[in-house]
Image (cartoon, rainbow, N blue to C red; front, side):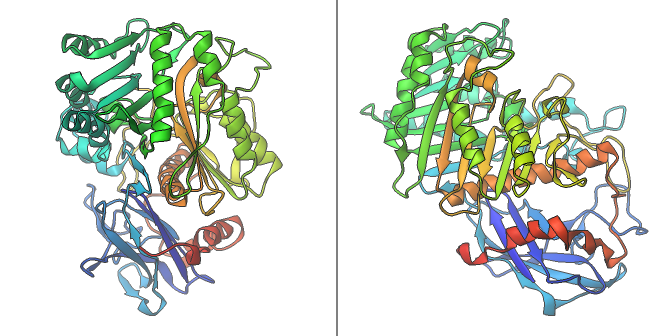
Length: 565
């Protein structure tokens, strides 16, 4: 049997593959080994065997008792900075009398939960609400679903355990450049869209003298930003009110740091809006790049935005359409930068819209993919990466395509459903939650109330993440569709040749994709899972032939290329 593990700063994705089905195997015990202490312990599991009595409440046992009936798994309980190894041990026998086949056990490589990838730091929220964990942390509403009012109260309270768990340390990462500037005599230059999180607003207000902020409106009434905008003006912050027309959005979420000598030092960007829901109720990412060259490019864009006022005028659009010099980091990582709006037209034409330069670059990278394209998107529109995926799926059946979008409205319209395994598993899945209790499973929240919109809010494309030289990560505030290039203030990074970073983003995407894939299939009535483990070893069969086996071979076949921590 072969096994391999991949990690980012908070999640481990691991998989194993035997040569053939294991006789009498009812699943795997997956055991975590802490490399600092040598302690080995089985991971928890919440799914019992069919026929076993449970309390009806959220209940876990170890995978020695309730094994994993999959050849891939995820682990969320590690500590950043620690190194782990995992062991897959086949469990054979009957549900009430399992025996560990230690002779068939297989170890993964060692992985360290790390946010640093050379001069780049990347972190991810844990903002998936449709989990059994969260469903059991909140009181129940009248219909038996978790109470979203209690959730909203929790995520607005700094230090609340639910807020801390869901945000994944993102708030501290966003505040760090501001606090560093205050301590060192530097300054931060920011362009933000939504700003309402109490902890982040307080940080800006308390350190207003080192902040220069371009704050866009969030609609005609600017309801989201109105209170924080007034606070910052009252505190004497250097704030520019960028009040755009209703067809335009000042969608950036970027911070550029300069030192005491006003030399640009680093850039923080990503998909995370500075709101409680952005931090806690959506899948999001934050990325920081230490680079004088990149920070200088962002400073030039920031100055153009400020000079532009609220016009989205010709000078800004022309500058944004010009390809910037590629940034190369000391480890060889290559970064291409794009800003929006970058088209002469102020709105995307309804038909035959010219391809914006940033999207042309994205499409070119996708067309050059060798084995795999992964993505997460929120309302990318059409044309977009979704329409490009659709084209590639028809032309390149060899490509492994995985992706998730925020709602059914973002799936391709008037087109065939996309599949990565013919007639089996959707390649693009919409976010869904468990809406009815079954087995030991409880009702879940999909979003933080009826007025919430985004669930998956990332804007990510990852191409060939297992390749040392050809891996690509595309990210930023850009929604990865034409409309954003025509009408929004946006920033986008295309990062090449940093496999550590690509694998971190791969783990994040696979986590979100797998989570919603199961729930989406259940929503469609296509899932045969009844909430319990199978009592037959036949559960293995669907994984060990055809496309599913090829996928496992792909993820377990490069052990020699992954260096142990």
